[in-house]
Length: 241
Image: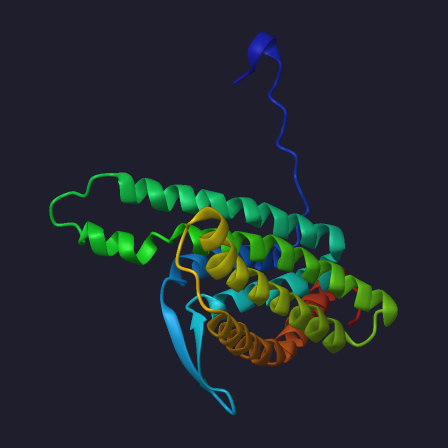
């Protein structure tokens, strides 16, 4: 059917977006929003030397975001990775708006207990502030550090930029989240409970060691993912891998 005044509607523009970019971007955002939702549960993890440490439930899911962003940085460059990181930051607010809108809407008969639902999904203000501040700083630093190491090593030693960027950004993430959520927000905004300094230090050390171990484990996965994508892209373009 002709459009207005007999003009045929224009065909949608066809974008050549690699499937791997779509998958890794979806993985990044999925892991991010999952980490936000499940962080209400605190994990008790036993580590050598340190013993039992406490970490938010989203620690593992959040570690997946660094795996995805490092793969995106290596395969598609700094600019694309930063776009994904900053767009995903906005998705945090979409998640929060949808969760709190659902909590505020009256429950129907037969629903799960609204109070229990709110307890599990309704993150406290100090935790929200801490996680948002930690995310936007640490994830942007991860992309910057990854590419600085890449330039320094002339593109060699993928393991070094993976571990170096993730280890430094995870440290930033842990320190910023813990201090904002359990020191700054309670003291300045009166939101949440302030924790004593020894407890803050214990939380930072325990969480960081756990995150660092996860970062070391994910390095072979980054190598495997990057090699798989490059092989598939080379085969698709008719070039021998």
